[in-house]
Amino acid sequence: MKPKFTTNLKIKFLKQSPMKMDPTHAHTLNQLALTLYMFMVVIFMNSCSNTTTPNYSDSFLDTRDGQRYKYVTIGNQIWMAENMNFDTADKVGSWCYHDSDYYCNVYGRLYNWATAMGIDSSYNSKYWGKNTGLHRGICPIGWHIPSDNEWGNLFFTTGNSDTTGKNLKSINGWDTADGIDLYGFDALPSGNYNHGIFEDLGDEAAWITTSEIDSTRDYTSIAIINSTNPYLWAGPPQDSKQLGLSLRCIKD
Image (cartoon, rainbow, N blue to C red; front, side, top):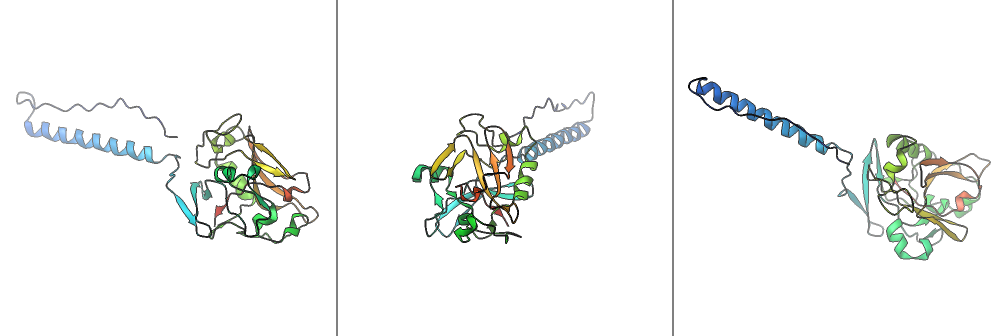
């Protein structure tokens, strides 16, 4: 969103008048006025360029499958500006909404936790405990799956409890309360896959984090934006690792 600028600055150029001012002095003042005018123009143009409007030309190629992804810098983080759409080799543990390629192309794929993490599927039902540091999972080289702390940083950077959801959500596609996509994150309501049922398309976006709760539980934190505001969810059901959720990667 670009700020609106209004200016009432008027530059009056002096007319040379041999009766009232020496021509040399008048020329000098005219040159100073012109210099001041050009200086104000430069300030205006720089102000326009220093906005949060994202540069959508920023993208990179995932050489594994030829997919190209937009990315955007928000605060001190670099995020993918769209969901992952990488089809795993064994074609297990990931889905297109309604099993249609159309939804994968628009919203990205949905993954269970172990598939996104690139580890054995048995860890969808038990504690893994090795997710310290940056974990790439199925993200492209140089990118990793965000932790709940990294999601929290994003939510904090982009607003407050009343504005963050609107600032991150896409400008269309939501059944209610479209966003303004202030930072170019373009959060689409991609829904989820819940034990054989596709649900919440248009109502909710939910993303995988690397963060397991503790060694006695087999579920993880989930980053969620619904029709109102974003939050990190870390409650039941305890089989949350088996849900099909979206995946956003963050730069190492």
